[in-house]
Image (tube, rainbow, N blue to C red; front, side, top):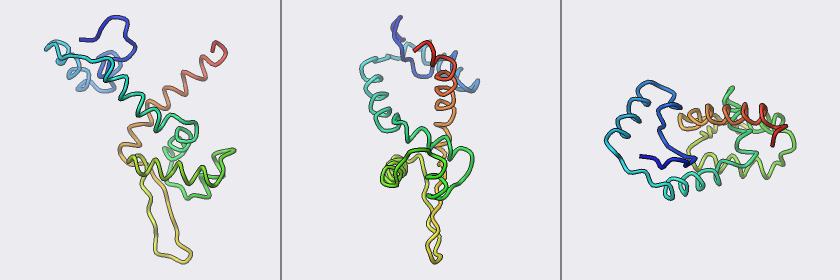
Length: 139
């Protein structure tokens, strides 16, 4: 069970996106599964260090709309350099959020799209964006 006052509770029934996940979270709580705040926070911090930068979030958001080529992403993501876009796309691909497809044409055509894992990230990214818009003046 989670400790009162902790900020992070994976699988919390009140914020689960499907009834099945909510039932699963309630079942885990009922069985008294141990919750380790330090370990969970460390895992969250590690993941946020990989995807929490401003470029990754923007790129995931844009790719959530459609498959895009490098030049299209560069045009959409205002202020990103070619080097930073290349690095960010490579990192997102390495971590399994983005799929890169190379077509055997001359010149080569390369497209980027979200993987299932990347699409799973869209909902929390969208929620964070909505929260940021609603609370920007208060922060």
